[in-house]
Length: 526
Image 1 (cartoon, rainbow, N blue to C red):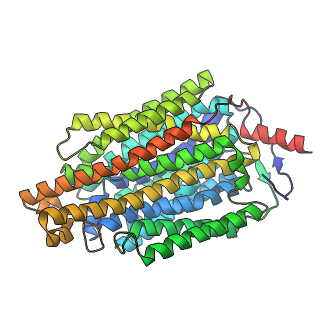
Image 2 (cartoon, helix red, strand yellow):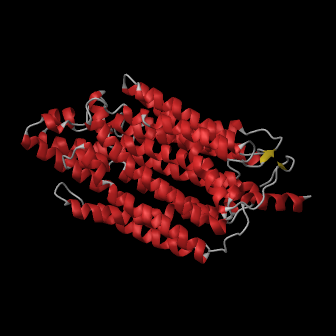
Image 3 (cartoon, rainbow, N blue to C red):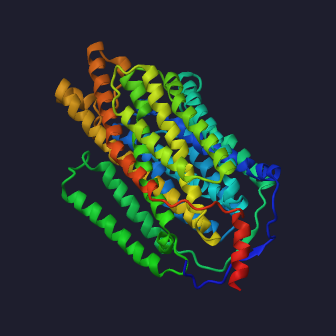
């Protein structure tokens, strides 16, 4: 990366750290990661009930998910860049503090508007945790050993994902608690994570006298947000082919082009364009975007499918998500251990891409009569593929860049994966809403569609417990058909991700930690 700033000065240079000390230092990080995962999964099963209680629409359903993803996506590059300049420990604690504030606001919200604002605050905090957790791991642990610890994080991810839907379902179904506790339950865990990080995390301080490129950060955020707003509202508030589309898409692209111009001239850009000269980083980024679109865009609506199309309770819907989580947990942990043992990683990326593609294809065949056993198998296949693919894309990129670019490289991958997820949720959410409206109009007529189809602001997610049996059967069939079509859209996207992975060249894993490599690079530069 080209920079006019002075080389970094390290204080308290690192030494080889024992596995026990590494695990102790990562304990607070694991709790923080658990909280971030729990916050998203615990809400998934509660969303249909939240929308019903707060009189929200299908578009609001999408925005409750999208707003957090949007805030997380937009802030990840800034968090990653600051991690290369300032105290990683302080930044992680700050991100967790924001998460606490967002959770409290969400738990006490009187309406969907404030709920969406609270999700933005949560997303900013989650962006910090998402970007910084892998940055800290790379700083402490050599890539050759990272697989083992990434497997541990995979287990934490799995436990958080398993616990989330179950806890969310129980909270929603317990009358004296309710869905508000889905947000409040994470507060004590987050505070615990802040305390643990204060006591256990000890990283060398990087002192670097530079100016953060806030103009670049603002332009990137504005451009991405403009495109996401368009992808969410198009087809609902205005036609896809309209002046609104031309204005928002044109404005977003022009803003992003201006951001590229600013970044190419900044001494310390938020996203250094030079890292894309690295083939591994570029291909891993492309794969991350496509995986994000397919994965987030498809699976975020599965809970709605369980509860509306299959008529399950929130608790049962939580239980139905276990096969995918179990597949992810096992494949992530096992793959991490084997990568550390063998020192080879590309085979796991390719296998993950193939298996994820198969899972997407299988889930595109679901309908209102699909058996629980078949659903479980399909979801387990998808989970196994995701577990082998997503984490190891980051590992491959981290292994192939200079130590002083570790933070920004990690955040760039996270940024583009999150952006893919946000685009997937908003765009595919709009597709889902339109498809539901069209099918409901076709089968029940315009008045019924407006009352329960979901599409524009006037369309609400139906409460099937209050409707006649014949209407319920039609609604369930409509939601099942529309959800299957989302996974069908995800199939070619996942296939393109597999193609990108195939072109990544495998390189031996580095045996030095990020901090040790940074010392060597600084010494060599003098």
